[in-house]
Amino acid sequence: MVTVDFDYKKASTVEEALEALASREGKLLAGGYSLIPSMKLRLSQPEFLIDISSISSLKGIQEENGYIVIRAGTTHAEIHDNALIQENLSFFHKAASVIGDVQVRNRGTIGGSLAHADPAADWPALVLAADAVIDVVSRNGSRSINATDFFTGLFSTALEENELITAIRIPVPAEGTRTVYMKYEHPASRFAIVGCAIMRFPDGKTNIAFTGAAEYAFRDTAAEQALAGKALDGAAIEAAVNAALQGQDVSFMGDYYASAEYRQHLAKVYLKRALEAVV
Image: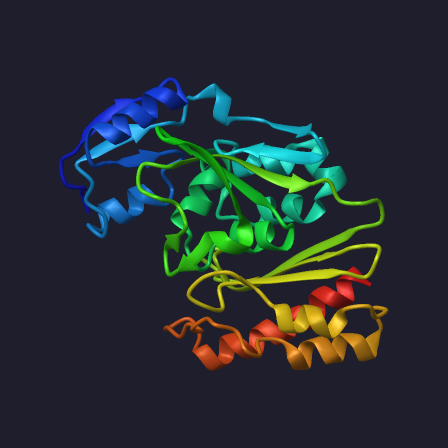
């Protein structure tokens, strides 16, 4: 299908993009692999697109003040290939390798994925498990949003109107931290029917996050509490699997790929596999 007519502006700085966004109702265009398909299906019909794909300040990965900082315009492929990511956040490296196809990985961006908040996207689970902070800016100033507060519903986030994601900041993991990401993927799109991300710290703290199972990605606090202060042995893993998904304030999804009940079953299966992989 063909999109509705729209006006287009290519911004060269964040300030220029924010000015354009404030001037009239429109959408930000980064990689375009979420927005353009929805426009072709007429699910989204913006009259104005602001292209931020060439803004240099939104690109790159570096370590700053105890955080690994991934700029919002960094592509999935750049995350995959980055030595700092490979050394400190191996599950980011893994996730970047299983997103879409080569074209998607080389054009799609982490900031665009998080702003779109597809319930089956990979990055939401990763930033949740990593205790990430998402930096955003508007013409009124900047602020930081904890990943645990960012995803609020189906394709819905804590971003306010006219805000732009500038960076994702992850605390540098302590030596000995282990990370795992596993997903049961749709064979064509490679979106997660269920995905599980785990960060296990040397002190025994374990962060567990799911994507694909519910209307938005979430941390499984019940499973985390079942592992608190325990060695990661078979009994602890079984306890975490049994506790998983209990008391979650989310709606589990059912569609022609998988029913809600089957997604909940898969979530427990992949939690067990991921925890065993951590061991």
